[in-house]
Amino acid sequence: MAVIDFKCKECGNEFFEVIKFEEKVKCPKCNSEDVERIYKGKFYGKNNCGGNCSHCQGCH
Image 1: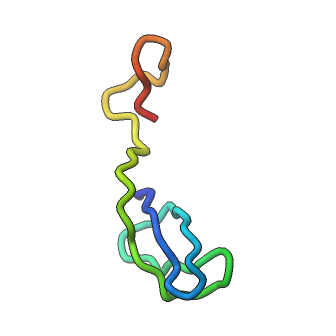
Image 2: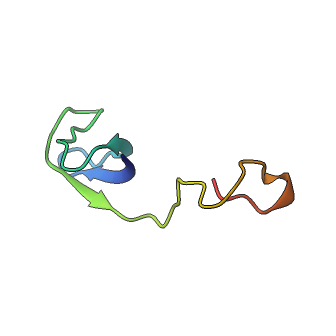
């Protein structure tokens, strides 16, 4: 599963979804399936992190 950012082409709403592979995504605001994947440069994972951000700058 992956957390992906999307933008609705109908209403302009930006949102993210946790999806599996080629799952259909609908806009939560207007229910349109006319959405596109966008890249915001965010990282949602933990990548070798113990989850305690007191010892680092934080990765999530």
